[in-house]
Each structure stands twice: as C-alpha cells, then as structure tokens.
Image (cartoon, rainbow, N blue to C red; front, side, top):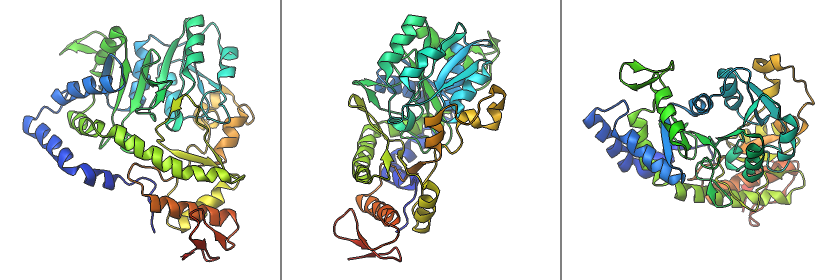
Length: 388
C-alpha cells in the first residue's frame, strides 16, 4: 500500500462541488483583487479565531513580517523566538531590520523553553515570538506575563496551528497579533499561497490593511512604502469553503494522532508531548528516533511518505552565520533536528493506512525479524510484507 505524506486530492474530491461553485462565483463577478470573498473570509476567520479582526495576506511569511512592521519593530530592536522553527519565523524579524534572538525549546513539547526567555531580555528587546509548532500551542500565560512585565509585544506564529486551543482559547488571538499561513498542506490550506493575521487591536488591523496594499489606504494615496501582499479573492473563496470543515478535519487529525500514539510503547521512539491544558491540531505528527535516516529510508522503500521538519536548525543555517552561533548553543534543538521524522498526517488518512505505517515502523525497530504488529492480528516477515 502506498501512503502519501499529504494527499490533497482526497480533500478536494470530498468538497469538490462546494469548491467549484465558490471559484465559479468569483469568475462570474471578476472581482479578483480584494473582492467580496476577501472581506467575508476576514470576518469569518476572525470569528473562528475568537478575535476582533483578521486581515488576509499573500503568505504566512508576510503575516509575520508585516505584523512586526505594524508594531513598529525596526533596526536596533530584538525579537526573542525559538531556535526550532521554520526559517520564516526568524527571517520576518530580519526583514524589518531587527535581530532574531534564539532560545532553546522544551525537550517534551519542542516549543519555546519558557525558563530561558527572561535571561535573553535586554534593553533592545521589543517582542517575543512563540511558535505553535506542529499544531502544539506554546505555553502562553507565562509568556504574556513576561511581556507585560517588560512592556513587550507578543507575536504568535500560529502558521501551523489553525484552530488549536490553549486553556480553552484559540491561539493567534492571545498575543498582540497572530500570524497564519494558508500554504496548501496546512490544516486550513488554500490552492496556492495565502496568509492572515488576527488581532484584537483596531489600529494594528488598519495598519496591516495599508501595508498589504502598497501602502495605500485609498487608491493612489500612499501614506507609507510597502509592497503588494494582498490575499487573492479566489483563494479567499476557497478558504471560506474549507473553514466550514476545519473543526471536523482537526478532529480527524486528532483521531489519527491517537492511533499513532501507540508508538509511545517503544522505548526507542519519542513523540511530541501535549500539555494537559492544550488542544493541539496536529499539523504534523512528529516522532524522534536515533536512527531517523535509516527509518525514513525503510519507510520510503515500503511506499510510505515522510518529511523532516527541520534538518538544519535556523541558527546553523548559512543565512544566519553572521550571528556567530555554533553547534552546541541550543542542544535540545540540535539533537531534535537529527532525530525528528514527520509521519503521514492529513484529515482523510485512513485507519488501515496508519496500521500499515505502524507495522512498517515496528518491523524496522525489530531489525526485520518476524514480529507481531501493533494491530495484534498481522505479522511482518523478514521481507517486509504482511501475512495473515
């Protein structure tokens, strides 16, 4: 059985009539730039996130960068963020001229280590950027307490956490603003690039609308210099359809994750911990194993797609060599980078497909010996095939 890492075709086929109708409506109106679906999606997404405002943008990276600009963060400022994230988190800081200040992550949750933030706050610090990595919320209450104590902004990188809850609250609307990505593979994905910020501050929302639209509040009247970062109307129409299904899809991901959780019975595998007060949405299901590359190669041979997020930590990327970091600066992040493997995860993933994945993992861990699988009724032969 072939199991894709992400199968977007299944999702499209399940909602094809709704999607096709939404696209056709935009084509009939020909309101392709900041059309009515953009405003409608912004209202609906803000309501979904339990925020006052949402502003549609062209990508999650733009959401982070323009969000920092809207807060007035510029050169000479510093922003604290976890070393374990996609580079866009740090790049957004660099793009506004500020300095990304990395801290290590908690070894269980792989989100920012709360205990390390305070020691990195300086006179130049202007913001903290927690990342809700893999759909797992960061511990927001102590972050907000630190921010209030030091008069700092909090920018939530929620690009992988659409619909996740922290102590009952939607992530993204807890800090000063939250940034989301609608990359096609995300829990709420467009059919191309897209993004948004959510906020409870009307001034931030208004500034974001100016920054996304060439610095203009009205046509040909530019009050600041900025580029074109608008969310396409076609993408907004697609996202409106998908948003109606998001809670159901997230529940399906949680069910898939509960089946994967059987892997915790192996002493050789570590899964990402979930705090009791969190309700994650499993954008990715990530395991850690010492012989990660060999396991990935074995699963590939069995036709099982996987991913690695992320093989080279941000602080060790050539693009950030000027910061002077060395191996060993952030040991948890670095160790995880060599051990993390993302298993297939999407809402339409079937239980029998997860069974095949688990069987293949157990087979690898047992060195190819005949062994009873986790399902209890199948065995793996030395050739790697199942027998009943």
